[in-house]
Structures are given as structure tokens and as C-alpha cells.
Length: 96
Image (cartoon, rainbow, N blue to C red; front, side, top):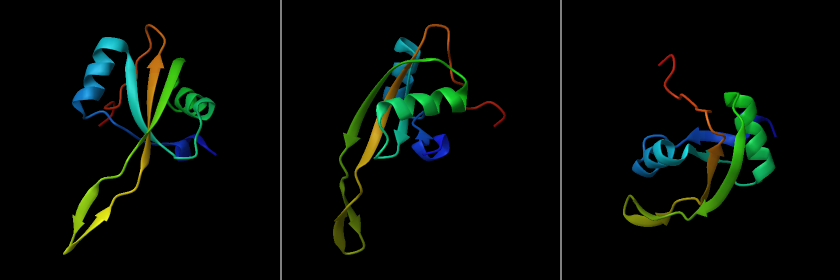
């Protein structure tokens, strides 16, 4: 897998994401379901040119949502919490 397929999107606009980034230098990403921790580490290091210390992953369960008259379950997805080494940062809004 190439790094662009592993990292789907950063989760920067959440309260938990902001708190983790400010307090512990951790960043949240939505990643591919079949990606493992070493692949996520390599993808973040190549895409953002930073050094990763730890990677924690979890499967987020889909929710029941209303679709027209019925109810359907949204897909499960994988979240990764990436801890960076001291002094490293990722700026998502550069050039925006």
C-alpha cells in the first residue's frame, strides 16, 4: 500500500483531537481498515516528514443512521492515535 491509501484523513477538528495535540503531542487519523501499526508509522513519517514514537489503533463502530424512511448502519472505520517525538509537529493548515 502507498502512504496516500493508508492515511485517509486527519481528524483535526474534534475536541479530543485538539486536546491530545496540545497536551500530549498526539494526532488522530482515519486510516485504512487493513493497515497495521508499522504501515501507519511509515505512512505518517513519509507524508509529514516527522518521527513517530507510538501508534495506537482502534476500530470505531458504525452507527445506526436514518436513510430515508428506514434505518441503516454506517460502516465501521479505523482510527489511529499517533504520538510524535518531542519537538515534532504537524501543521495541517499550511498553505490553506
